Length: 258
Image 1 (cartoon, rainbow, N blue to C red):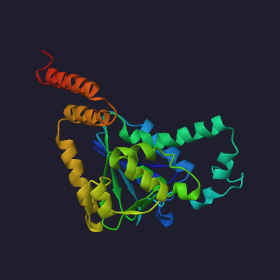
Image 2 (image 1 turned 180 degrees about the vertical axis):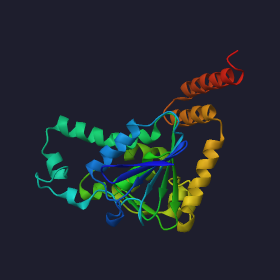
Image 3 (image 1 turned 180 degrees about the horizontal axis):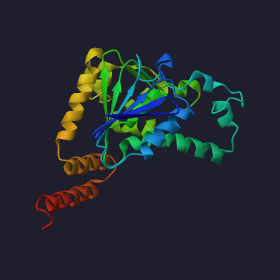
Image 4 (image 1 turned 120 degrees about the horizontal axis):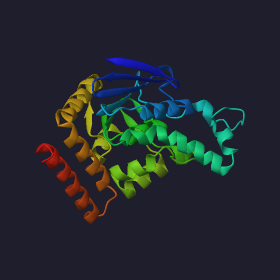
């Protein structure tokens, strides 16, 4: 197993085909800053073809309590704060947010399946990071919340598209506008959580899921993941065509290219 530390309180460890990404700021409940998002984006840009599964977790008792409170300052002198961002020209502000979003969007990169291991709170940016992953395993004490609208903001770290994919239009609308917490049991019932386990069983449950995913042949696993992702947006004819093309590639490989 190999590991690396990154700026922004992000730590990585590699074990074969599995990359674990840990938010490592437990004394602040893994509160995030722009440096966190840039570090996450750097991890994504450095992925190699041998990585099949990415596990995202938070050190300590919470996955992530969201945006670091210091960044809520409207003081233009707070580097990376909302005040500084709000005073930028619109195009420059949007470009900066686009770079931040890159720290989340790569978790659905072709070739990898991502799993969020969520304990305690996943609030705001923390919830959006969990939503950015393909799969989520929650502990029984976990809750997710998107309070941005109640703070005069919007979820802007890829959270709206991923939430609608998971729970549908009307439920996503309710959760985003009310900012109410969603406990683990409800999260599983509405499709936000793939599994809910006791806190002591989180590592084992995630490990079992990783083992099951990596047991399938790599080519079939990657083609299938790509099909499931495209099914969210494709019309039936386009998706049928994607399935035909993927199966043809699989059959060609299975018979050795003959």
